[in-house]
Amino acid sequence: MKTTGRSRLLISVAALGVAGIALSGCTGGPGTNNNDNGNGGEDDGVVTVYGTIADTEAELLEQSWADWEEENDIDIKYESSKEFEAQIAVRAQGGNAPDIAIFPQPGLMADIANRDYLVPAPDAVKANVEEGWTEDWANYATVDGTLYGAPLMASVKGWIWYSPSFFADHGYEVPTDWQGLLDLTAQIQSDTDTPPWCIGFGSDAATGWPGTDWIEDIVLRQSGTDVYDKWVSNEVPFTDPAIKSAFDEFGKVALNPDYVNAGFGDTATIVTTPFGDTAGALANGDCALHHQASFFDGFITDAGAEVAEDGDIWAFLMPPFEAGGASDGAVVTGGGEIVAAFDDSESTQKVQEYLSSADWANSRVSLGGVISANKGLDPENASSNILKEAISILQDDTTTFRFDASDLMPGAVGAGTFFKGMVDWVNGTDTDTVLEQIEGGWPSE
Image (cartoon, rainbow, N blue to C red; front, side, top):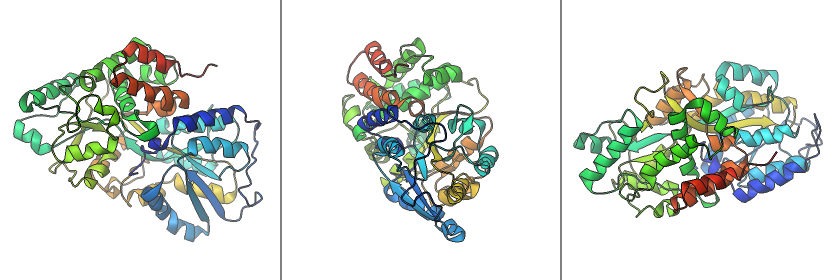
């Protein structure tokens, strides 16, 4: 696991179903907090933090706050779980919630908040959010007008990865609109007689999520923020012509055997190819184009290639649907985590305050592999040029940013029928049927 945005790869659709069942049985009322965290509710200077961040990333997370722990005489105990989405609900209901949870999906945080298990963010966190985060980011941590937490890390999605030397050798230029990207695809295929794109949907129980990212990027660029926001809340259903159009546009690439799947086989291999394996195909030249988030630079580096404008691999953002677009700045989707608390002890509030600060953001980003949208983050602390570019985009007031739609949708849809629908669609199920099946996952009110 390299960075934020991949926390979603730990999602188990079955686990999310369990989470929904657990939540439906919650009985906590307003202000209810059953959590004693094993210490009788006393503030003993130990703060438990629970999340999905694992392995090397977890080690770097603990390193990021180590000096602060010592200076403030607070012991932060971090626990990672691949079953976070299910267990956070179970633990909250059973009175064994952590002091702090790092939620990989704002929608899941809202579910927990609506059951009155979370405590509102303290004033110090509110002040940090007002100072360091845009209104959009603050809204992702807000439920019914109450701020419950603060963003942590972030990713910028929608990058198209390519080889600068390959482009230069063939006289290719970065396209300025969606049709230009399709034209470039056709030109590369004609010149090389090989598929230009490599696409991998494989991700264990979360197989299919890279396809949702494609659809989200196209919906935002083709139909705009109003449709995107209404789609997230199901005011615009999956069966709406705007969403079908996004599938049709993606299909011009993903369903064309002349265009995919470079280095792996035909279109049928999209589902069976692990999403990370595409880095190797890109690095060795089998693949000319690939769509993935900012964290992908870590995979490429691991594959032995240098990520730089004059290096082996670089990236440009998926262009607007029409040249010039409706915005003066970049139009991007992205992901991240939200930090919220189950108790309001002094130590817990201090940890919350630190994790919402620019000081923490600079500490963690300087350790490599991740970024943050905190305005106080120095981009020069990022470990790669593409991450520096992503930070600049997030900090630019002209950027139109929208959180990953599937992470905002109810889990039964966003990590359930949407993921499965992308798999079925690539495997040949017609678009109308797929869209109806995805829409069928929305919980009935």
